[in-house]
Structure formats: structure tokens, C-alpha cells
Image 1 (cartoon, helix red, strand yellow):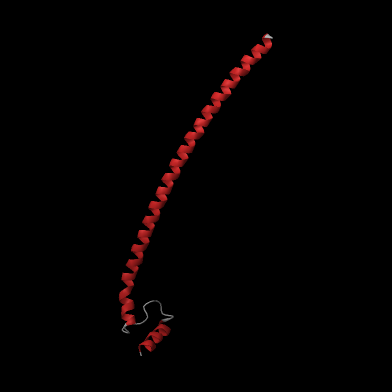
Image 2 (cartoon, helix red, strand yellow; image 1 turned 30 degrees about the vertical axis):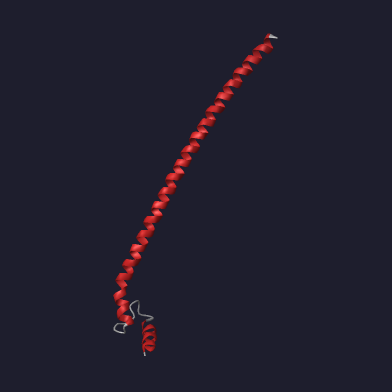
Length: 102
């Protein structure tokens, strides 16, 4: 009987160890989940910021390009200059525009 009592005490202690270890692991998991959520939020914020920055840069470069090329196209459309981009379509484009103007 003493043997059974000793086993019971031993099992009870082991159960306590397992339960405390389980609680510790659950707490670690909870902390890790919180850290992951925080990291995801930071990454999402960084992604949104980068996306806005990229959009702004793209728009700025687009309009700078438009402003750079408008004078060339304006002269071409007024019939005062040759086709402004490349040389291979120059005659076709020039003929088309000049035919439309007539």
C-alpha cells in the first residue's frame, strides 16, 4: 500500500510539473503570437508606406516625362517638326498627320 501511495504522490508531482510546463508553453505561444501580430502590423505599415511612396514617385516621373516631351509633340502636331520619337515610323506618322490636316 505504501508503494501505491508513493506512486500516487510521484504521479501527482509529475502531473503538477506537466501542468506548470503546459501553462508556461501556452504563455510563450501567446507571447509569440502577439509578437507575430506586431511584426505583421509593422510589415503591413511598411508595405503601405512603400506603396504610397512608389505611387508618388511614379506619378512624379510620369508628369516630368510628359512635361519633357510636350514641346516636341506640340511642334509635331502643329506640323512644324518631324515625328519626335524614333525614325522608323517618322514618315508614316508624318504623312498621316499631314493628311488629316489637309
